[in-house]
Image 1 (cartoon, rainbow, N blue to C red):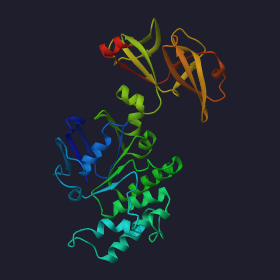
Image 2 (image 1 turned 90 degrees about the vertical axis):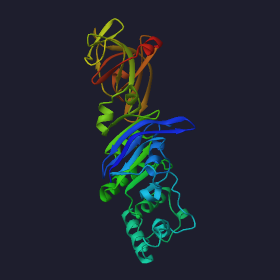
Image 3 (image 1 turned 90 degrees about the horizontal axis):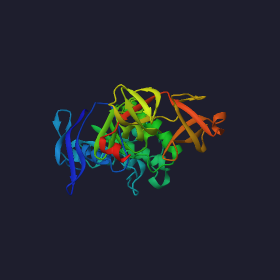
Image 4 (image 1 turned 180 degrees about the vertical axis):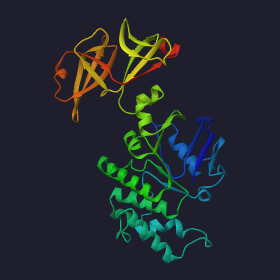
Length: 353
C-alpha cells in the first residue's frame, strides 16, 4: 500500500508541530522517521494512523484520501513502545483480539482466529507460548506479541512508535535484526519512529530525518550519512566535528591559512567545515592543514578519541585514532579531513560566530 503525505500542517493550540510536510512512501517499503524530541516524527506517525487529523493537507492511502478516516477504516497495525498488551488475556488471546472484535459480518470463526494466532506466534518465534500471560514473558517477548497482534488484522500499513525504546541495548540489537527479517517475509508497508540513529540506519530502506516539524532529508542510510544536505543532518547523523572557516574562490581557509580543501559549491564568505572524526589523515606538519593542541583523550571501544584545541580554547574538534597510535600521546597534532562538507553561513550567523 502506497502512502502519500501531501503538504500536511498540524497545529496544537495554534502551535505548529508540522510545517507543510510532504512524503511519498512506496508499497512494501520500510521507512524510519528519525529525529530528536520535538521534531514532529511521532505527530507524523499519528497522522498516518488516523489518531490525529491534519490542520491542512492530506494523507492518501493509494489513490484514496484517508485524511478523515478513522484508525479502523484505514486498517493500520500499531505497535507502541510499552507493548499495550491486555494483562488478563493469554498471549494467543492478545494476538487474536483485533480479529475477535471485528463486526460479525467480517469476523472470522473462532477456530480461524486461533489458527491465525498460532501461525503468527510461530512467525515471531514464540511457538508454544500462546497459553501464557504477558507478565510471564520477557520485555523482548512481549514486544514480539505486540507485533504479532498488529499483523493479525492484515493491516494495509504497519506503524511502530519507538518499538524498542523500553528494552536494553542487547535485546534492541537482536530485535532489530529480527524485525528486518519479519518485514522481508511479510512485505508490509512499514513506518517506524525512532530517535536512535543506529537503529534507523541499520533497519530502514529509507531514512526521513526530521527537525522542528520539517523534513530535512530523505534517503538511504548511505545518503544521509555520507551525503548530508544540511548542517543539522551532518551534526545529527553519526559523530561529526565542525570548524568555522571562510571560503575564497572555492578554496577553504582557516584564518590566514589555506587548508588545501576545495569547496566549489560554497559561496565566498564565512562557512562551517564539517567532517567525521574517523575520516581524517594525520600529517607530520604542513603549510596547509589543521593543527591543534591535545586537550583531552579518551578510550572509545577499539579506538581513541582525541579532542584538539584549534587556535586556542575557542574552537575544539575531535579526531579518532587507533587506540595505540603514537600520535595520541603528542601535545600537538596536524591533520586534514579525507572527506568533508562546507556549508556557507547566513550573514546573521556569521556575525554571531
